[in-house]
Length: 134
Image 1 (cartoon, rainbow, N blue to C red):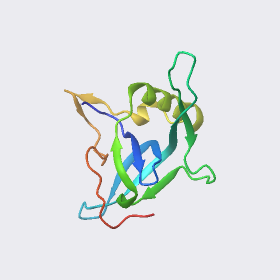
Image 2 (cartoon, one colour):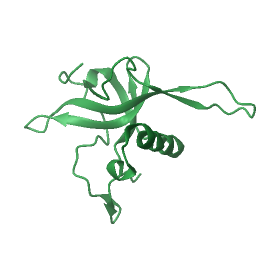
Image 3 (cartoon, one colour):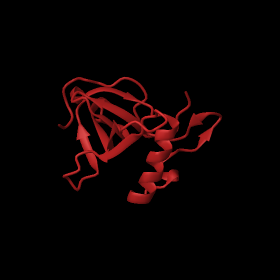
């Protein structure tokens, strides 16, 4: 799967599914010490529509805080996965309208199918070792 963005659905140990811009945090030795969730939204299913489909509801995660960036340790994360294309497009639109974050700030340019961004976006497993913020 070709990916050129840091958008992930992060499943937390609380059972919450959080859609966010997700990156890892590293120390000087490049060891993962935590994870950053930026502009996080909790995903949940709404009431069934007449046609039987279930809409997805988006709610600000930690809505009682003015913060939009949160650092958590790997101990609080079960999984990080790529969002469905429809969820991704809705999220990108929401970020543009509510936070002023543009598509160009989210998606990196690709050459020959490879991302050109050098940021430390998590692509695979999550380090659950001690460290990072809570």
